[in-house]
Image (tube, rainbow, N blue to C red; front, side):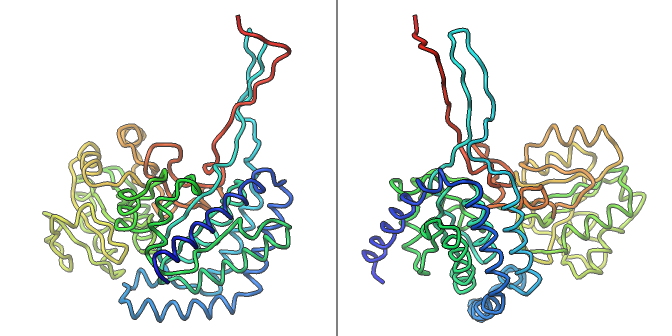
Length: 420
C-alpha cells in the first residue's frame, strides 16, 4: 500500500470517526452499556479465535526478537481473555460521565450556570504490543462518548484485529455505528504519521508504549497529546519500614509482571534500614532471579551486578532493577527527582512524617505508601480500565479512565437577563 493510498484510507477513517462521534455524544447510557456487554460476551465466546490469532503474533514477536518481558505483554491466554472481558463489564458498570453536572451556581445577574461533562470527540490511540489495550481503549472511549481510532503495534496485529471484531459485534448489537471504534488495518508506519497530523479529524492522541514511541508522537504530533511516558518507578524503603512488609512489596513490585509500566525499576534503601537488616531485600530479589544492578556498598553483595550510570533512570521492563543506598528521605526524593519519570513512586515506612514529606515533595502522577507500584492501574483505582497513565500535567494525570476522556461545557440559563 503506497503512501497516497494510506493517506486516502486514513482520511476516510478520520471522517467516519468524526461522523460517529456526533452520534456517540448523544447516545444514551443504555445503548453504550449494551454495546460494552455485547462486546464482553463476544470476546469470551470467541476466546479460541483470539488465542489462535495471538499465536500468530507470538511467532511474529519471536522472529522480531522481542524480550521475554515483551513477549509476556503480547501473550493472551484464557485467564487474560477472561480479565479483558471482565474489564469491559467493569467499564460498563461505571457511571456514564457524559452530561454529568460537575458544579452549578447562581449569579446576581440572574444567570444560573452549570459546568457539564462533554466528550472530547475523536481520540486516536497508538500503542505497542499489549493487545488488551484494544479492548480497554475501545471501551473507555465508547463509555465517554468518544469515537476512537486504534493503531496497535505491528506485533499484536492479529490479536488486536480479533478483539476489534468483538467490539464491532457489541456496537452493531446496540445499534451504534461500527465506525465508533475503528482499527487501522495496516502495519505501515505511514498510518501513524497520518494520525499525528490529522487535526481535522482527531481531537487528542494517546500514545501507549515505550520511550521511542512516545518521543516520536510528542515530536511529530500536530494534535494534542496525553503523554504516557516511561514508568521509571522507584520504591524507597525507609529507616522504619517493616522488613516483612518491605520484602513482600518489593518482590511483588518487581516480579509480579515485569513488562508493565508499574513495575519497580529502582530500589532505594535507607542506610539505617540496611544497617539493621543487611542485604535482606537484595537477597530476596536475587533469589527470585532478578538481575540487581547495585551501586556502591550494595555492589559488594554476592550475585549483584555493578551498576552503570545509565542503569538509573532506565525502564528495564524485565527481571532487572537498579538498587542504591540513600541517607534519608530527602536523598531519596532528590534521586527520584533526578531519575524518575513522574509516573509512580512509593515509600515503605512506619513514619507518618516521612511519608507526608515524601508525598508533599514529589510530583509524580501517583505516589504510594506501603503498597506495591503494580497497583498503578486504572482498574485497581476503580475506573474499570485505563487508556494509559498520563505523566504530563495538562487535562489528565495518572490513570486515564472514561471520566478523564471528557471535557466540559457551560450551560447558562437566564430569565430575560441583559448585561448593563
